[in-house]
Image (cartoon, rainbow, N blue to C red):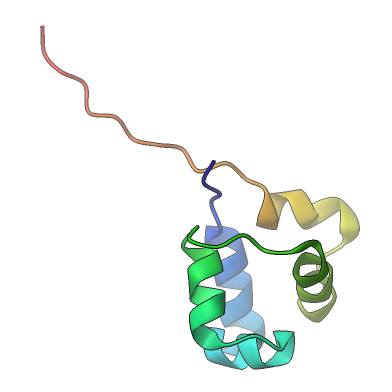
Length: 79
């Protein structure tokens, strides 16, 4: 299952300026963060909790940023 991290990416840019700055605060590498934001690796529970604290995401808003399903666009074939 792929997740839509667009809201998370916007918040990271707003609060930290760059993904690299945020990755340092999260204690992971820039590439590791990028892999997570591009659905190549999963965020661990510890990373989600730490990221939520760093970004000041209320507990009830965590699903919006970390568990929103990515909608797949399918091309419709003409009959």
